[in-house]
Structures are given as structure tokens and as C-alpha cells.
Length: 112
Image (cartoon, rainbow, N blue to C red):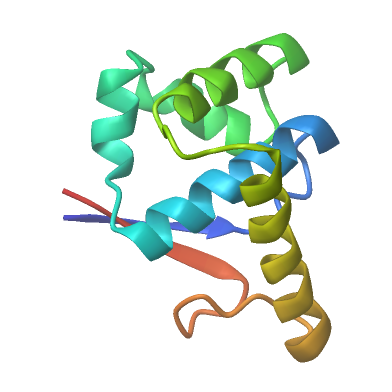
């Protein structure tokens, strides 16, 4: 099992992509989805995904990768994306950080 620390605020990611990526992180963390499985099903190399979350990919590449991953989550829609982002934002307001798993604003995502 691999653990990845990700800043859930995604400060270097373009705003439109950030909203969807934060939703994906929320879904992975709270619904037991596997990032490895999602990347494999979407045919996305792990380094490409890491470039997106670090803000080192082009806007087009970031949007493309994010959309491929979003398409794998059947229950996603604008309302769910908005609610997940509101939950993460409120957690930051209350505590000054997002504490998804007692690691500050870092989400610990387990990969199987």
C-alpha cells in the first residue's frame, strides 16, 4: 500500500481543475476508491497525475486528465462537486486547515 500526501487546497492547480480534483480526493478518501484503480482504468500514467496535482502540467493536460478521472465516477454531478468543495472549505475555515485524517491539510490516500 502506498501513501501519498497531497495538499487538499491544491494551490498550484488552475481553479477549474482544482474544483474537480478536490472532489476526486474527497471521493477517494471517503468512499474507499483506489487512486491506482482509477488511474489504471483511465489509462493515465501516475507521473502525469502527479504533475497535475503539483501544478506542473499544462492547463489542457490538467483538464483532460481530471475529466478522464471524473468520467469514472458515475454519481458525480455539479451539486456533488460543489458540496465536496464546500465541506473542504468549511473544514479549512474552522480549523485553518483541512484535517482529513489527522495530517494537517494533507490527504492520505491509500493505494492498493
